[in-house]
Image 1 (cartoon, helix red, strand yellow):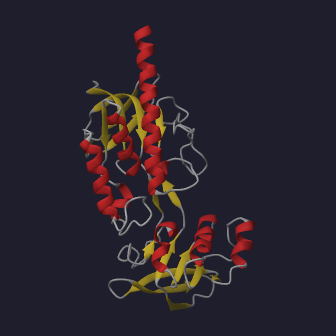
Image 2 (cartoon, rainbow, N blue to C red):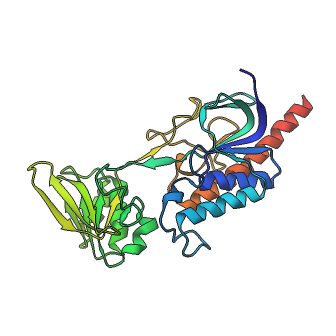
Length: 316
Protein backbone atom coordinates (compact mmCIF):
# COMPACT_ATOMS: atom_id res chain seq x y z
CA UNK A 1 0.00 0.00 0.00
CA UNK A 2 1.40 3.38 -1.00
CA UNK A 3 2.12 6.05 1.57
CA UNK A 4 -0.33 8.89 1.00
CA UNK A 5 1.40 11.54 3.11
CA UNK A 6 4.15 12.03 5.68
CA UNK A 7 3.81 14.33 8.70
CA UNK A 8 6.14 15.54 11.39
CA UNK A 9 3.50 14.82 14.05
CA UNK A 10 0.28 12.83 13.97
CA UNK A 11 -2.06 13.08 16.96
CA UNK A 12 -4.65 10.36 17.50
CA UNK A 13 -7.50 11.53 19.72
CA UNK A 14 -9.22 14.89 20.09
CA UNK A 15 -9.85 15.21 23.82
CA UNK A 16 -8.18 17.86 26.01
CA UNK A 17 -4.79 16.12 25.80
CA UNK A 18 -4.87 15.78 22.03
CA UNK A 19 -6.13 19.31 21.41
CA UNK A 20 -3.53 20.81 23.75
CA UNK A 21 -0.84 18.79 21.97
CA UNK A 22 -2.09 20.04 18.62
CA UNK A 23 -2.06 23.65 19.75
CA UNK A 24 1.55 23.41 20.95
CA UNK A 25 2.68 21.47 17.87
CA UNK A 26 1.29 24.14 15.55
CA UNK A 27 2.85 26.88 17.66
CA UNK A 28 6.15 25.05 17.08
CA UNK A 29 5.46 25.22 13.31
CA UNK A 30 5.31 21.42 13.00
CA UNK A 31 3.47 19.78 10.11
CA UNK A 32 0.74 18.25 12.26
CA UNK A 33 -2.64 16.61 11.86
CA UNK A 34 -5.12 15.37 14.46
CA UNK A 35 -7.53 12.48 13.89
CA UNK A 36 -10.66 12.05 16.02
CA UNK A 37 -13.31 9.50 15.10
CA UNK A 38 -15.98 11.01 17.33
CA UNK A 39 -16.85 14.34 18.88
CA UNK A 40 -13.83 16.59 19.59
CA UNK A 41 -13.41 17.14 23.30
CA UNK A 42 -13.71 13.51 24.29
CA UNK A 43 -15.59 12.70 27.48
CA UNK A 44 -15.70 16.30 28.68
CA UNK A 45 -17.99 17.13 25.75
CA UNK A 46 -20.75 15.14 27.49
CA UNK A 47 -20.07 16.56 30.96
CA UNK A 48 -22.79 18.87 32.21
CA UNK A 49 -20.63 21.28 34.22
CA UNK A 50 -16.89 21.76 34.70
CA UNK A 51 -16.06 23.58 37.92
CA UNK A 52 -12.36 22.85 38.39
CA UNK A 53 -10.61 23.91 35.19
CA UNK A 54 -8.53 26.97 36.13
CA UNK A 55 -9.85 30.23 34.72
CA UNK A 56 -13.09 28.73 33.43
CA UNK A 57 -15.85 29.48 35.91
CA UNK A 58 -19.39 28.29 35.22
CA UNK A 59 -18.70 26.46 31.96
CA UNK A 60 -20.23 23.29 30.58
CA UNK A 61 -18.08 20.43 29.34
CA UNK A 62 -19.36 20.96 25.80
CA UNK A 63 -18.47 24.65 25.84
CA UNK A 64 -15.00 23.97 27.23
CA UNK A 65 -14.43 21.36 24.53
CA UNK A 66 -15.54 23.85 21.88
CA UNK A 67 -13.15 26.48 23.21
CA UNK A 68 -10.26 24.01 23.18
CA UNK A 69 -11.09 22.93 19.63
CA UNK A 70 -11.37 26.47 18.29
CA UNK A 71 -8.20 27.55 20.08
CA UNK A 72 -6.20 24.72 18.49
CA UNK A 73 -7.74 25.38 15.07
CA UNK A 74 -6.91 29.09 15.35
CA UNK A 75 -3.25 28.07 15.02
CA UNK A 76 -4.05 26.09 11.89
CA UNK A 77 -4.42 22.59 13.34
CA UNK A 78 -6.32 20.29 10.94
CA UNK A 79 -8.79 18.24 12.99
CA UNK A 80 -10.10 15.45 10.78
CA UNK A 81 -13.02 13.22 11.69
CA UNK A 82 -11.43 9.97 10.63
CA UNK A 83 -11.04 6.68 12.46
CA UNK A 84 -7.55 5.24 12.89
CA UNK A 85 -7.58 1.51 12.15
CA UNK A 86 -3.98 0.53 12.88
CA UNK A 87 -0.68 1.93 14.13
CA UNK A 88 2.75 0.45 13.47
CA UNK A 89 5.97 1.50 15.14
CA UNK A 90 9.00 1.96 12.92
CA UNK A 91 12.69 2.64 13.41
CA UNK A 92 12.63 6.03 11.68
CA UNK A 93 8.99 6.69 10.84
CA UNK A 94 5.79 5.39 12.41
CA UNK A 95 2.79 4.51 10.25
CA UNK A 96 -0.90 5.17 10.76
CA UNK A 97 -3.57 3.45 8.68
CA UNK A 98 -6.99 5.07 8.55
CA UNK A 99 -10.28 3.19 8.33
CA UNK A 100 -10.74 4.54 4.79
CA UNK A 101 -7.54 2.76 3.74
CA UNK A 102 -5.18 5.75 3.64
CA UNK A 103 -1.69 5.01 4.94
CA UNK A 104 0.26 7.85 6.54
CA UNK A 105 3.73 8.20 8.05
CA UNK A 106 4.96 10.42 10.84
CA UNK A 107 8.20 11.24 12.62
CA UNK A 108 6.46 11.62 16.00
CA UNK A 109 3.18 10.12 17.10
CA UNK A 110 1.08 11.38 20.03
CA UNK A 111 -1.53 8.94 21.29
CA UNK A 112 -4.41 10.69 23.06
CA UNK A 113 -7.09 8.02 22.72
CA UNK A 114 -8.18 8.17 26.38
CA UNK A 115 -10.29 5.54 28.03
CA UNK A 116 -13.74 4.74 29.33
CA UNK A 117 -15.23 4.35 32.75
CA UNK A 118 -16.96 1.04 33.29
CA UNK A 119 -20.68 1.45 33.62
CA UNK A 120 -23.31 -0.47 35.56
CA UNK A 121 -25.61 -0.66 32.55
CA UNK A 122 -28.78 -0.19 34.59
CA UNK A 123 -31.91 1.90 33.99
CA UNK A 124 -31.43 5.57 34.85
CA UNK A 125 -27.64 5.54 34.60
CA UNK A 126 -27.44 7.18 31.18
CA UNK A 127 -30.59 9.25 31.68
CA UNK A 128 -29.23 11.03 34.77
CA UNK A 129 -25.59 11.34 33.72
CA UNK A 130 -24.56 14.84 34.73
CA UNK A 131 -27.79 15.25 36.73
CA UNK A 132 -26.95 13.09 39.72
CA UNK A 133 -24.92 10.29 38.14
CA UNK A 134 -21.17 10.84 38.08
CA UNK A 135 -17.92 8.93 37.58
CA UNK A 136 -15.70 11.56 39.23
CA UNK A 137 -16.10 12.77 42.81
CA UNK A 138 -13.36 15.37 42.43
CA UNK A 139 -15.21 16.84 39.46
CA UNK A 140 -18.78 16.76 40.78
CA UNK A 141 -18.66 16.34 44.56
CA UNK A 142 -19.07 20.08 45.08
CA UNK A 143 -22.65 19.89 43.75
CA UNK A 144 -23.68 17.48 46.52
CA UNK A 145 -22.68 19.49 49.53
CA UNK A 146 -24.81 18.47 52.55
CA UNK A 147 -26.68 15.86 50.47
CA UNK A 148 -26.92 12.08 50.51
CA UNK A 149 -24.96 10.13 47.90
CA UNK A 150 -24.29 6.53 46.91
CA UNK A 151 -20.84 5.29 45.93
CA UNK A 152 -20.73 2.01 44.00
CA UNK A 153 -17.55 -0.09 44.11
CA UNK A 154 -15.11 -1.79 46.43
CA UNK A 155 -11.62 -0.97 45.23
CA UNK A 156 -9.14 1.75 46.13
CA UNK A 157 -10.77 4.37 43.91
CA UNK A 158 -14.26 3.76 45.30
CA UNK A 159 -13.05 4.05 48.90
CA UNK A 160 -10.88 7.10 48.18
CA UNK A 161 -13.80 8.85 46.48
CA UNK A 162 -16.18 7.90 49.30
CA UNK A 163 -13.77 9.44 51.80
CA UNK A 164 -13.50 12.56 49.65
CA UNK A 165 -17.28 12.86 49.39
CA UNK A 166 -17.69 12.41 53.15
CA UNK A 167 -16.00 15.80 53.60
CA UNK A 168 -18.70 17.46 51.49
CA UNK A 169 -21.91 15.49 51.91
CA UNK A 170 -24.26 14.71 54.74
CA UNK A 171 -24.20 10.92 54.21
CA UNK A 172 -22.36 8.45 51.97
CA UNK A 173 -23.57 4.91 51.29
CA UNK A 174 -20.82 2.70 49.89
CA UNK A 175 -22.55 -0.14 48.05
CA UNK A 176 -20.46 -3.24 47.34
CA UNK A 177 -21.57 -6.46 45.69
CA UNK A 178 -19.33 -8.63 47.90
CA UNK A 179 -18.65 -9.07 51.60
CA UNK A 180 -15.07 -7.76 51.56
CA UNK A 181 -13.52 -4.68 49.98
CA UNK A 182 -10.62 -4.90 47.53
CA UNK A 183 -9.19 -1.59 48.74
CA UNK A 184 -5.94 -1.46 50.70
CA UNK A 185 -5.99 -1.97 54.45
CA UNK A 186 -5.05 1.63 55.25
CA UNK A 187 -7.93 2.95 53.14
CA UNK A 188 -10.30 0.48 54.77
CA UNK A 189 -9.27 1.62 58.24
CA UNK A 190 -9.94 5.23 57.26
CA UNK A 191 -13.29 4.20 55.86
CA UNK A 192 -14.43 2.46 59.03
CA UNK A 193 -13.32 5.46 61.08
CA UNK A 194 -15.50 7.86 59.09
CA UNK A 195 -18.95 8.14 60.73
CA UNK A 196 -20.58 9.66 57.65
CA UNK A 197 -19.93 6.53 55.56
CA UNK A 198 -22.09 3.42 55.79
CA UNK A 199 -21.08 0.29 53.87
CA UNK A 200 -23.90 -1.79 52.41
CA UNK A 201 -22.55 -5.29 51.77
CA UNK A 202 -23.59 -7.97 49.28
CA UNK A 203 -25.72 -5.51 47.35
CA UNK A 204 -26.06 -4.30 43.78
CA UNK A 205 -27.83 -1.21 42.47
CA UNK A 206 -30.49 -2.27 39.96
CA UNK A 207 -31.97 1.10 38.99
CA UNK A 208 -31.34 4.80 39.43
CA UNK A 209 -34.56 6.73 39.85
CA UNK A 210 -35.33 10.42 39.56
CA UNK A 211 -37.93 13.08 39.03
CA UNK A 212 -37.06 13.69 35.40
CA UNK A 213 -34.37 16.25 36.15
CA UNK A 214 -32.32 14.91 39.08
CA UNK A 215 -31.67 11.65 40.92
CA UNK A 216 -33.98 10.97 43.86
CA UNK A 217 -33.49 7.30 44.80
CA UNK A 218 -31.81 3.99 43.96
CA UNK A 219 -33.24 0.48 43.81
CA UNK A 220 -31.11 -2.36 45.17
CA UNK A 221 -30.97 -6.11 45.48
CA UNK A 222 -29.12 -8.21 48.04
CA UNK A 223 -26.89 -10.72 46.22
CA UNK A 224 -27.27 -13.35 48.98
CA UNK A 225 -30.89 -13.12 50.08
CA UNK A 226 -32.45 -11.68 46.95
CA UNK A 227 -34.10 -8.99 49.05
CA UNK A 228 -35.05 -5.92 47.02
CA UNK A 229 -35.68 -2.39 48.12
CA UNK A 230 -35.14 1.30 47.56
CA UNK A 231 -33.66 4.20 49.47
CA UNK A 232 -33.45 7.96 48.76
CA UNK A 233 -30.28 9.47 47.33
CA UNK A 234 -29.35 12.75 45.67
CA UNK A 235 -26.46 11.37 43.68
CA UNK A 236 -24.78 8.16 42.54
CA UNK A 237 -21.00 7.92 42.03
CA UNK A 238 -19.86 4.84 40.14
CA UNK A 239 -16.30 3.51 40.52
CA UNK A 240 -16.16 -0.03 39.21
CA UNK A 241 -13.11 0.41 37.02
CA UNK A 242 -11.63 2.33 34.13
CA UNK A 243 -10.46 0.85 30.84
CA UNK A 244 -7.84 2.58 28.67
CA UNK A 245 -8.49 2.55 24.92
CA UNK A 246 -5.31 0.61 24.20
CA UNK A 247 -6.48 -1.50 21.27
CA UNK A 248 -4.38 0.50 18.79
CA UNK A 249 -1.21 0.60 20.87
CA UNK A 250 1.72 -1.11 19.09
CA UNK A 251 3.00 -4.25 20.82
CA UNK A 252 6.43 -2.65 21.31
CA UNK A 253 4.94 -0.03 23.67
CA UNK A 254 5.14 -1.01 27.34
CA UNK A 255 1.93 -1.06 29.39
CA UNK A 256 1.21 -1.87 33.01
CA UNK A 257 -0.98 -4.72 34.25
CA UNK A 258 -4.12 -2.59 33.89
CA UNK A 259 -3.31 -1.73 30.28
CA UNK A 260 -2.22 1.87 30.82
CA UNK A 261 0.78 3.03 28.81
CA UNK A 262 3.99 3.58 30.75
CA UNK A 263 5.83 6.82 29.91
CA UNK A 264 8.68 8.95 31.17
CA UNK A 265 8.39 12.56 32.34
CA UNK A 266 8.23 13.69 28.69
CA UNK A 267 5.20 11.43 28.10
CA UNK A 268 7.40 9.36 25.79
CA UNK A 269 6.75 5.63 25.66
CA UNK A 270 9.25 2.78 25.43
CA UNK A 271 9.30 3.40 21.65
CA UNK A 272 11.23 6.55 20.67
CA UNK A 273 8.99 9.10 19.00
CA UNK A 274 5.74 7.66 20.31
CA UNK A 275 4.10 9.62 23.12
CA UNK A 276 1.07 8.80 25.26
CA UNK A 277 -1.03 11.47 26.96
CA UNK A 278 -4.20 11.92 28.97
CA UNK A 279 -6.19 9.05 30.41
CA UNK A 280 -4.27 6.50 28.33
CA UNK A 281 -1.10 7.15 30.32
CA UNK A 282 -0.26 5.63 33.70
CA UNK A 283 -0.33 8.46 36.22
CA UNK A 284 -1.68 9.56 39.59
CA UNK A 285 -4.72 11.61 38.60
CA UNK A 286 -7.12 11.79 35.66
CA UNK A 287 -8.27 15.39 35.41
CA UNK A 288 -8.86 17.72 32.48
CA UNK A 289 -6.08 20.07 33.54
CA UNK A 290 -3.65 17.13 33.86
CA UNK A 291 -4.59 15.84 30.41
CA UNK A 292 -4.02 19.27 28.89
CA UNK A 293 -0.64 19.47 30.63
CA UNK A 294 0.27 16.05 29.21
CA UNK A 295 -0.54 17.33 25.73
CA UNK A 296 1.70 20.35 26.20
CA UNK A 297 4.60 18.25 27.50
CA UNK A 298 4.31 15.66 24.73
CA UNK A 299 4.15 18.33 22.02
CA UNK A 300 7.27 20.08 23.31
CA UNK A 301 9.06 16.73 23.56
CA UNK A 302 7.85 15.74 20.08
CA UNK A 303 9.17 19.02 18.66
CA UNK A 304 12.58 18.27 20.15
CA UNK A 305 12.45 14.69 18.82
CA UNK A 306 11.61 15.91 15.31
CA UNK A 307 14.54 18.35 15.35
CA UNK A 308 16.93 15.61 16.48
CA UNK A 309 15.71 13.31 13.72
CA UNK A 310 16.14 16.09 11.14
CA UNK A 311 19.70 16.66 12.31
CA UNK A 312 20.47 12.96 12.00
CA UNK A 313 19.11 12.85 8.47
CA UNK A 314 21.09 15.92 7.39
CA UNK A 315 24.34 14.59 8.82
CA UNK A 316 24.01 11.15 7.22
